[in-house]
Image 1 (tube, rainbow, N blue to C red):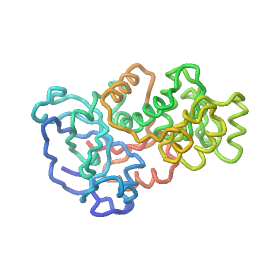
Image 2 (image 1 turned 90 degrees about the vertical axis):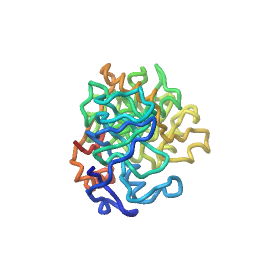
Image 3 (image 1 turned 30 degrees about the vertical axis):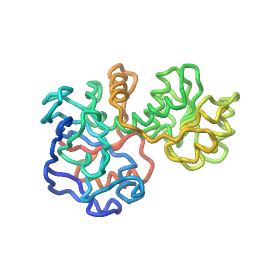
Length: 307
């Protein structure tokens, strides 16, 4: 199979397109012919070695955790899927080696859900990790109908999905973003506020009583800003700053969940959730996709077209 590989830790220039043996399909797994693979910042952070102390990484490394595709073969004792089924998956494995930037991926059925018909292949590949991160973050802070929720980086891959999920739950969403993304956030149902100095005051201007919950999807001073406007610090969640827990908040590291992923697919098919794809690049241009992701100015998702 063709795949994007790295022989050692490094940046985008270490990514090369080549031939790799097809993956073996263990009991409880299916072989997926990948249509598209989602790009996530964690991909290049692993590639750079930033998570070497947390994860077992083996080379040559095929990066990536998000896929959409078609089941090509099933392993022993699999009755959840059949050949020809269209699926999506957050295919994070215990060992980081055989990832999503490839024509074929072997994935345990515990990592897969049926592809929502409302999304095309690129949109579907952008849903799993970002969607699960947003979904689980909102659940951790107990976001519900009537809440005022502050979402930092609301126009990004995770933030744009979190905004839609919060709106669908009946919450009022205040979303931070650059000026160029304010109309986009309004389309998603959020009230945009610009980043930068004076953010606390701007949030207080439109929510004088404070906010009920806050989600940090960007880092920097987002947690500190949140502490100044959230009534209960236990309802702050961050995916970037583990120190949020020191003041009673929640640090979230997304977990694979078939139930959650299936619920996200259902919401997409009900028209309550969509995936904004900023750009689709061919598999061979994975390095450029990483550079765009590192730039931090993406609206929604970056996706690799594989098939």
